[in-house]
Length: 282
Ligand SMILES: Cc1ncc(COP(=O)(O)O)c(C=O)c1O
Image (cartoon, rainbow, N blue to C red; front, side, top):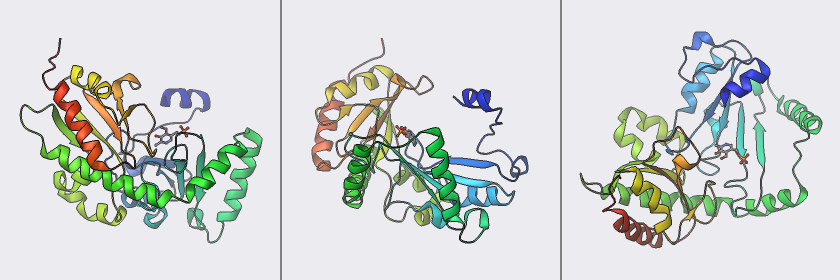
């Protein structure tokens, strides 16, 4: 994918952990946190410092942690992006995106409105204008954003804790990945994570099963989780990741938890996992 963009524009793409010295004024760090598909987080503040030390900017794709979970501006971000197809819409019925610019973009006081105007003008010329029905659906959904996101976040954290507690050397689940387990696994992340996500973690997490066959079949054994690629909706989704991403571990499933009662989701997973536990790789 990155070759595709650089081929069109000649843009040079560096890795996120490149030395700060490789950045120049006007460069953009594009950070997604929490990360797809694991749901683990990256320090926004550390990357804001790195970008600003070289006159570069930081954009955070905060799709996986919408309000009230994360405020990237509070940690030095210049531009915040959301796929509003996900939590902002929240009902699998619209496509859209949101870009927000801080009011002292690039350290210049009160210039947010000017930058926003420039972005609107570009949108007009490029034609990425949202349909009025999508816009209406998105605005209506904003009224329940906090309720939905908080509920899904609590649901996911409860499920993650339970799934993690079921791991044994022979259990179908080999590993669970989520920001709620991150501080335990990497104690050095504890402090910034508590500051960055003070109201809970995202509702996407992933699980690694013992083998590919278990991972391929588990979604079809579940009744409350739809097997689908999207995320951030009121209904829970599960995806065998290798189906859409050829680079993914073939034992990995991504879960996007919705607003159901988490104990119903737990029972569904418990039953589904029992059905695949004897599956061996052919
Ligand atoms: C983190 C993130 N950003 C952006 C997008 C693109 O969103 P859209 O489907 O609204 O184009 C996605 C889609 O999955 C995503 O996961």
